[in-house]
Length: 260
Image (cartoon, rainbow, N blue to C red; front, top):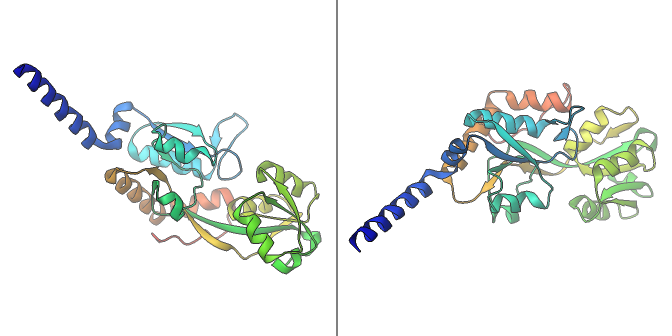
């Protein structure tokens, strides 16, 4: 009976030590870090001709894995699954263009912002769209049920809305084929699209600037501190500006982030 008590006490001590170890130690013991990225749209995340993950977020994720000192194992995550996969411990971190919102912050932890985006208007140059009011009467593609959808209805109530469930690639294709006059979507996607298509241009204004952070499950202050330190160094070292211009164009000015 006494030996059973000692064994039970030892098991509790080991469990407590394991709990104290935290996810950084778990990652290093495993030998790789599991990071969710979204590979649905250039330049944030997509696959190249060799079917390899590439893009702005992929570069950030690789740099974070290098800082941890382990290889990275990527998972292509949808917007619906990325938070649930963190909470179910299928992923260690998510670097997938996740906007920091109060609702999400209640269920997962966020790093300080490593990028920033907002809604942007893109239009055919031939459509002569210079203001939001110019969208009235124009065919405008937008994601169904998105913040862009609500914004468009409020800002240009007479616009002819063309809905898509997946702006990339469906909305992008409509713009490229000139089947719509304009579109509203995340600036990170539209800035890239306009820089590679001479018939399209973006309006300079950005609406509802939204910080984007690296997400992780709650309950590990050491991991949050580590990731925040990584992001602060990423910004202050100049790597942020270099990576932004790599994917969005050398002439573009990166959004100012808090760590700057």
